[in-house]
Length: 473
Image 1 (cartoon, rainbow, N blue to C red):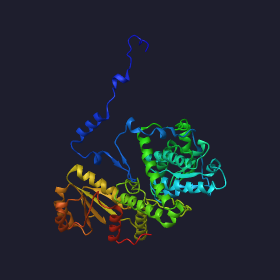
Image 2: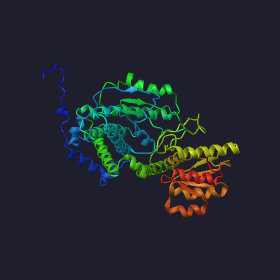
Image 3: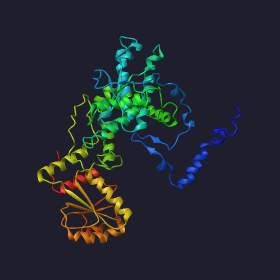
Image 4: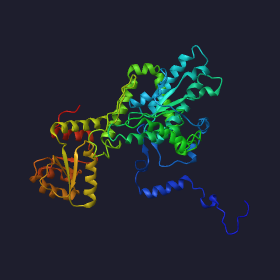
């Protein structure tokens, strides 16, 4: 290196940041965990069942050399608005809308693609046949999973096409038309859908889509196009062919998804192919199980849909405008995770239309500042998702509340309940799960408990029933 300018200092990164072996990192982590289980505390299990580690290093790319070479060559993508899909396109997006997770989308889509390719190659070379095949995929909210899913799609299709012995390696390329889905969109707090579409579009672009369609669900169609224009004109994301290439985490995740999807593809092939598997009910059964697991996580609020099952807009009772839901044409039912909560909100709205008022929930706080604040905020979000009128107060007066929830600390609840329950004629609940006091609290007049283990759909429906609401639409 040339001599530094007098008075300046040479920056030597290799000396300032010497290599640290993984064993040293793991030793520090083990020390910080203080005996806690590493997997339970630090490893994230995706809905597909993949284990995602807290960090990845270059050594995690060992054995993935062929994957690193199989990258998208072209830069940029085409903005497509309201495009009518080809009649014979491989509709992986319909699998997504029917509830499929990323591995199911890929495994079934590759199976569909192989059947289509086998049909086309009966009368034309594989190099000509592949040009007629287009994959339409959807990108969901799990940002890195969706990036890896699209990258894995290229790997899987290349491996599938190679079995047809093409003369040119270019025949292994895949055309990906990606769209934002309806599955995670909501009629309520509808402008949040714009934020969802923005992150989904970013996943699509970084994942390497060739065409991108953003569906305007509850927001202006002009904004749907402008999201893409911002990504191109302001963020310059069309300047790099494969922005995620070489990322230890995304490359490893791509490999994990591709391997599991290939196993599913082989399973479908063993059943006679996608058409037979669909007709036999195997596909529908698998997607139903995935939907049920996702619905349970949403209802238990282990997964959040902002504005729907958590953080509701308390000022919004009715949706600002009805979004026309045009049915997607496919053999599998379309599905939105917001629907159970939308049904609950509609039931409350219908009740208010009949009675002239929305049911009022009083969150009565007392005692420990930290606990009453945390528990009242929890209940504010929990019951706010049902479109109830929510009031938080430290003072109890003779109010017109339909439901009262005591928000305090466990040691203070019994005295709190003994004070309030005799004064009211409406149901009283406790925010929390004080297991050693439940019988005493029930004896004092408490009629229920709401806590982090409560199933939101079940609990909200139960109290709608008890408050005399007619069955929802």
